[in-house]
Length: 302
Image 1 (cartoon, rainbow, N blue to C red):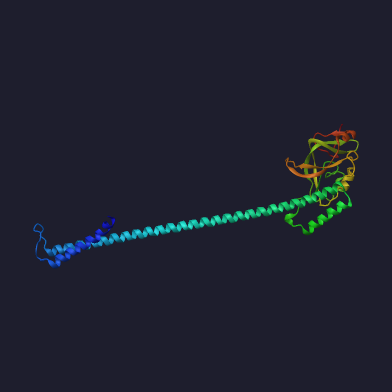
Image 2: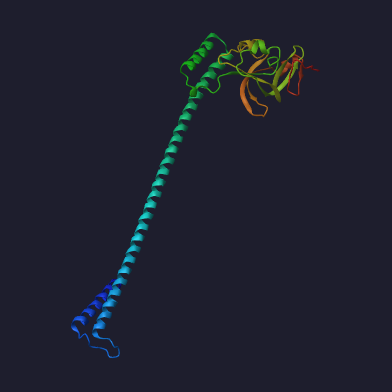
């Protein structure tokens, strides 16, 4: 049916041209075939030719319009397909960029983890050597520590060196800045003293004129001092009458490792400090300082 309808305009044109030709060439030109309509065969032929030509023009116009519409639709379809291809290409490029970025991030993360693990291993080795030397100072431990520092200076890369190889000591008495023992014993420090506190209880030893720190939960204020790697605590140990090889009862102070907090209550670092047993403090006439601060210029009343 659709094929018939598509062929109908052309068939009508053919029919009209055929009628016009038959009337023109095979009929009596002056004859009037239909009396009610006063038209001769020649005039009927003319009108058939005219209608056929009009139909032909209309048909050509319709076909041209249909062809234009079909071409326009095809062009739009091609344009939509091109846009889809462009969008798909952009999406693929974006996905490739995201994958590349993710791969780079993973590679950086892996490298950072490897560097962090390397730094941790080197730092642990250094701390072990350092603590071993501080606990039992002797030529062997000093030589091992010196060799390790030489190795770091020669082969250590900036990204693989320990985060902090400085020797840190928390002081709360005569070793604080401005007190009598600070300059003679702490002149090798490599950073400005950092104000902070440790947890404990501080007492003034009235018989000796300096303080002592005992285990407790008070804030004991003082300063964290930083010394260069390889710094020996022997002079400070001697001042505090501490020797790693003696028993705690024989030592006046005990050197221990403690967390140091900053004034905002954040953990600042960990450092050595000298602490005294509470029984000894009582024997030495210790005066409890509830404010957690000691000064050589302060007057203490038992």
